[in-house]
Amino acid sequence: MKKDPKSHPTSRIVRKAGQKKRANYVSAPKCAGYIQLESTLEATTAFALALDPRVASFRPQPCTYDLLSGRSYAKKENLIDEFVGKRYRPKPYTPDFLVRMRDGRAAFVETKAERWVNEDLHRDFLPKFFKSVGHHWTLITDETLTEIVAHNVRTLKAVIDRPPTKKTLEVLAEVPTESVRLGQLISEFDLGSDELLCAILSGFLAVDLFSRRLGPASFASLNPTPKTNHLEIIEL
Image 1 (cartoon, rainbow, N blue to C red):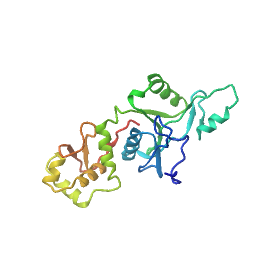
Image 2 (cartoon, rainbow, N blue to C red):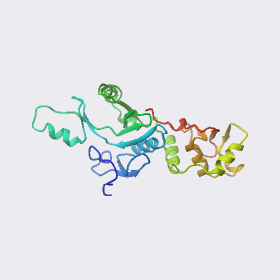
Image 3 (spheres, rainbow, N blue to C red):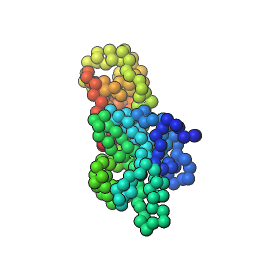
Image 4 (tube, rainbow, N blue to C red):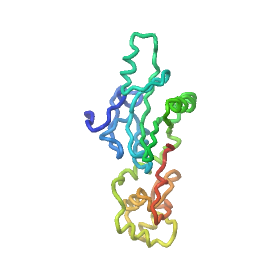
């Protein structure tokens, strides 16, 4: 696929992990155009950011830092070129995402499978490094974005641009209990599964996205006043 002119430029060439192939392109709300991602875990992170009500926008591979000097560069190649032929050897690092929050905060996010996490680098050095240059940095692994969470995130992402219908809100207002199984809402109240997903996204239903895959057996809490904190999957 050709590079999408609507997407933000990446700081370096994005390739599939361990391969000299261009990465896959996906589309995610809150991020311009089609974005280049290196793994399924990165794609799940992007979708989780798209669902998160705290997130205003995000972009992949936003810039490259020299971990020795603390300087940032729009392109990794700019950092490398600056010191070609010189004794100084920079240590480049490119975060996976830059996330801008609705409250004005910003955070860099790194996504990595737990088996590839370097304790000294990812859990000790990088958080301190970014704090020293005035930024927040967080690590997301497959211990947070488990198979269950990934399934639920991708299920909800399919209806992300759809608000709940008037019928859905009227039916939920008539449910006599504070919590109910999704299957009961389907069988007894004649709501479709997509309608329930839209209600979960809008906060009229709250579910636990970590413990089990969304399905008829899932319990949901009813919120007359919508609350969306159950969609805050990533620590930001």
